[in-house]
Length: 61
Image 1 (tube, rainbow, N blue to C red):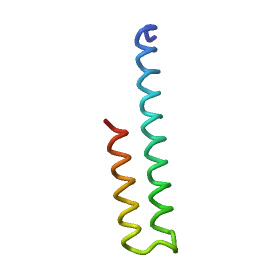
Image 2 (image 1 turned 45 degrees about the vertical axis):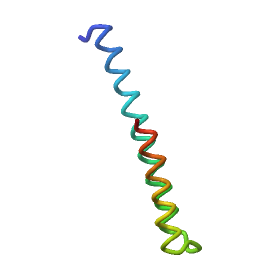
Image 3 (image 1 turned 90 degrees about the vertical axis):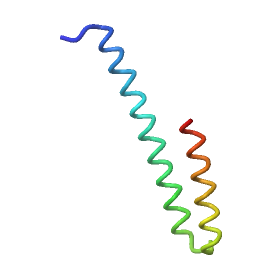
Image 4 (image 1 turned 180 degrees about the vertical axis):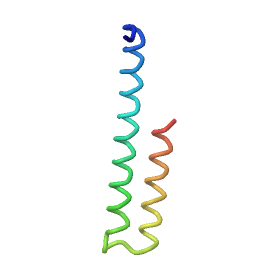
């Protein structure tokens, strides 16, 4: 059996993993929306992707 302290650590790590997965799913969803938007030209898509990457990199820090 696991000790209570170990159980708490495992739950804390699982929370972190779930948070990271949720952010990654949100990022991919936004990326798909940008790429598949028929109203955006190539330059607009590139600019939108750069903004999305900037936002993602600041959230990681």
